[in-house]
Amino acid sequence: MSDLHFDNRFVHELPGDPARGKAVRQVHGALWSPVDPDPVAAPRVLAVSREMLSTLGLDARDAESPEFAQVFGGNALLAGMQPYASNYGGHQFGHWAGQLGDGRAITLGETVNAAGERWELQLKGAGRTPYSRTADGRAVLRSSIREFLCSEAMHHLGVPTTRALSLVATGEDVLRDMFYDGHAAPEPGAVVCRVAPSFIRFGHFELPASRGDIGLLRRLVEFCIRRDFPHLDPDAPDVVSKWFGEICERTAVMVGHWMRVGFVHGVMNTDNLSILGLTIDYGPYGWIDDYDPDWTPNTTDAQRRRYRFGQQAAVAYWNLGRLASAVAALDPDVTPLQDGLARYVATYERTERDNAVAKLGLGEFREGDLELVESLQQWMRDTEVDMTLFFRGLIDVDPASPDLSSLEAAYYDDAKRDAGQPALRDWLARYAARLAEGPSADARREQMRCANPRYVLRNYLAQQVIDRATAGDPSDIDELLDVMRRPYDDQPGRETFAQRRPDWARHKAGCSMLSCSS
Ligand code: AMP
Ligand code: MG
Image 1 (cartoon, rainbow, N blue to C red):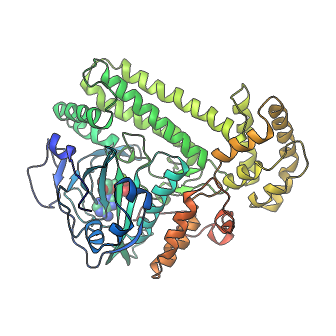
Image 2 (image 1 turned 180 degrees about the horizontal axis):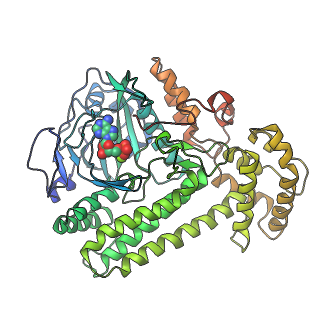
Image 3 (image 1 turned 120 degrees about the vertical axis):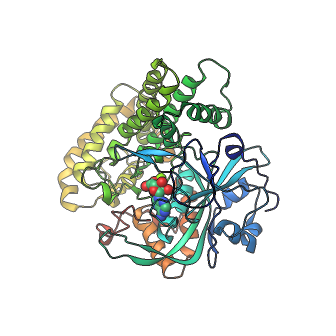
């Protein structure tokens, strides 16, 4: 652990809050406030990501050392760490919310590994900060398990994401009103160490812009370009436009992946969108079981469904518009920002085409392919078909043969299945006709296997692990993480992890719906 080398550019190059302590306050003219994690009673490592350990130059022995639990539970600092909470604002559910900031996230420092990669280490749930407002700065075990597992599962699925190094139980309870019904109860607490090259969010730019602090905004943009987009020439006259265009492109690519694997973020507020196009802030997220573009796991959003599955691309665009409005304060010419937004649209359209081609194994895009996949999606929705199981099962269907047995596991409703068979046959005939001009059968299957995971972190799978861990047995976390390491491979003996959502999970909290309480 002593080999970790820190180079904390965020605190060295950007203005910090001169005030000390955890008193809740509005912080002007500064992008961060120094704050130490609050110690916890009995830190115990419940899980680590071995991939993230090795990326940082650590190994299993480090993770087993008492020092590791102390540092990543928030009780000790390593030489070179300079903990802080960062200052940002955001639009929440479409409305400007003012200053938000890291209310329960504390960055420990930026470590640079042997390969020269910069990784920021950030504890989530490590206690109060000046941005905690009325909340406690802590996180419960259930939401920490979800964040830990999903960060790594998304990485293995090939989706841009922040990562997770460790999950540490605090040995302390946290009081939460899970259903917001006035029944708060103690729950075990935990701290996740998340890791990313940068945790800068859209809201970091919105806050100084909203306050008319153009100097601070400019410093942050220049810093972000230098540190997080080092391939751009910081002195080029059009660098801000290139930078914004790249953010647009990365955001489109990220959402394209979400749509490919059936991920619903759940809280796409502008404070929860990463400047690097990484999936960030795993809260009430969920995975599509039966294909339903109107589904959201977030109970807080159940009425309007602003952040439903099928809406995510439009919301990301809206969020980029908020970022553009903030950055526009730097330059009266907004044409480059409009070009960036157009780049989002073009990139997202490309990802839609790529997804259609890869998920159906069509080789290369042809006119009509989008229509082909869209008519399938409409049928999946009408027929209540499991998204993951259907596409995976489709790999083993020869569209010219009547044998559809590989799709059997994907149906949630027998009557709808039977009613949907004629339409499915029609669709398969169109699919077969398209494939006749496409790749070989083997090439089709290979392309589909790489785009359609067999295993995703279904909500009920995570909930089962959470229930066991809450009862005192965290060992299932490792097994589920291990399954998610190779989501595109058939893993003999692990069929139970690739089943459709069981009936009992349909309306159970944590399995089909989640509150923001975490
Ligand atoms: P989220 O909806 O999780 O992205 O959080 C929105 C804002 O609330 C952010 O500023 C968080 O830091 C803050 N927040 C959420 N939960 C807590 C908590 N338990 N303690 C302090 N701040 C919190
Ligand atoms: Mg957040």
